Length: 233
Image 1 (cartoon, rainbow, N blue to C red):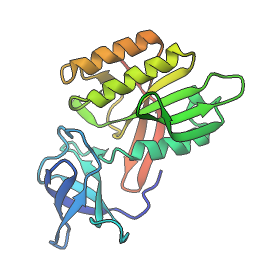
Image 2 (cartoon, helix red, strand yellow; image 1 turned 90 degrees about the horizontal axis):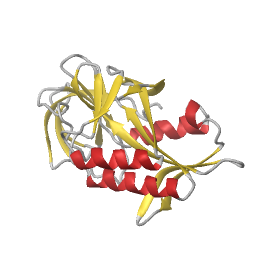
Image 3 (tube, rainbow, N blue to C red; image 1 turned 45 degrees about the horizontal axis):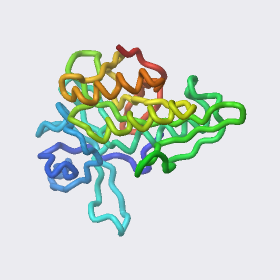
Image 4 (tube, one colour; image 1 turned 90 degrees about the vertical axis):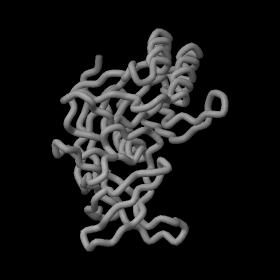
């Protein structure tokens, strides 16, 4: 998936109110960018960090910049926009590039299911059970090479796991797909210390038959490219 507009380098001044980030462009101008990330962004929102912004000229948007990437102290690029995984995966699913899901030819996004919920992707194919796929953006890394989810308490995430378990019990296939938005990790774990309730919800969902897929990416200022499966504990 390529970014629609070439990204601009900048320096993060501060992130605040979760969805706002003040940044300084190379010419010295200070701008406010939209931060499409409701999580804590632990380790990724340090003032002074190099960031990349995507400009837009949409008159309907109040903010003319969107924060897309940040560079860590170790030089790794990390995607911070939580909408990117769904955009990248839609392309990959339609092209049948995800091996574990390649048997499905029909891909529908944002379909209503369960109670007051929407599934990220509903996959269907004659002769196969419908497959409900929920996508999570993984950006947290507290140990070298290890990515974790979640980066904050997420009651919504636990609810999603419960919904997927219900789909399994109804005879469908259900998948929780964790997509890395960073290329410096090759292992994955649930961050049990951050949200024990989410960890328990995962164990319950797995016992009900919910599958887990962990997918890596290559992140550049040009876009995010899916690379393939990653190991998980």
